[in-house]
Picture 1 (cartoon, rainbow over the protein chains, first blue to last red):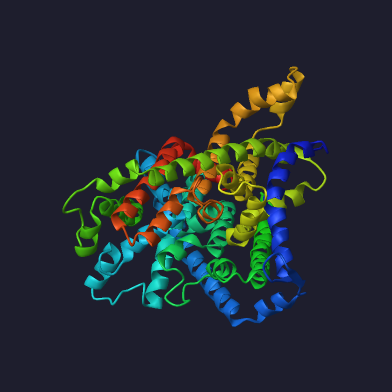
Picture 2: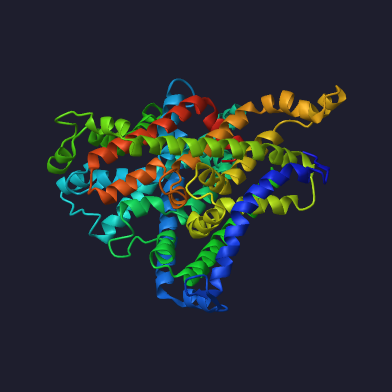
Length: 288
Length: 266
């Protein structure tokens, strides 16, 4: 669409600008402030320069948390994106099945995050939970509160349960926007199911899939409440992802300086990855 | 092959429903039964957990608080985002692209980063433990989202609509509310759905910014879990009740969900 140049449009943006600035800029400045200073309580501060940043970047604790976070996000994307596409491809396109699928599949998205954690906690408990009881009944030695491997398995399964639907809904919307003419053409050409997917459906879904990956990256990288309620970061520190570690440091130990420095590094990583994605997305849009 | 296609979504839905069923199952059991016996359905069916929640004000006020700040937030976010999205979809202005990306970065900020500064900030302006504080803090991620979704819907409306209205002598205000807003009503509905959803499910900020007067139901649950031992039955009943508002909202927007996801980009 051709947009006209109009500087007065700023007036329309001002309410949003003020509300978000009020919420983002002021707290962010507080964090920046802390990240360069040492606190002694009673509002006494001393300048520390970049000490906290160096300390965090060199600390093994941060490296470990970052490593766990990257592994988690990577596994999540690897499972949820193909699974989401697969389910969207098999969903009914018309009839009574459509609203049923949409309503039931959206359910996990609207449950408060701590309830998701609590729900999975009682679902996975080895003695009284359905999942834990069944797995132990099948002969697996399963206990997510004691064994790190089981804790990881449960956390990942929970996230797959919680968020795959988002990928499904996005892919489904992308598939629905394909004109029937494309499928007819493919049929006339005698294209195989795979070829139809590879050359018609996948390119048409490119935009929504980029978005799905972006959203899933962002949200899984910031994950806090669900694993916190499910495992509390344990056993030990084995499922303490970045946000859990950060809150522990800031509110638990009240190490404001290092916590603030860690916040900024954390935010910067998310921002960097999202910036790359955003540019890719905008390029896609410009092309289409 | 085509005949058996329904199996995949069916299995997926069963997988989705299992933990929810387990939660509902537990909510109709007494805590003693939960701890001592394993059963697929309640042996001694009881509704005492629900009775307790609906008669104890610390419990049911949690729901009232959660719904209050969620509704506040939805209204503020959509009201502020409407003109901004219109500006982004119709005009070029100084710094528009940067501003748009800056807005989005706030959707990307980990709430854990903001928890402590928010607490200090809202305490210093005497808004701590109020509904409005939580509603405002959720604007951090909901306004960017609302602007993003609405911009998608507005850009799909041809600009000729605006121009024809002006030629017909409509003022901007009359055009915007009488013609433009009804045209994108579906988009506004979708936006409200997402704002409601993200504000309803968020806990970290809501919990940090409240103590007693505006405490969300989700926080009541975590605190009960830690203070009075482990009242699993009660916890399960409270959890089950938090699913209901979401289910109601989904029912109303079911026809727009798929479309909204695609057009609104979220």
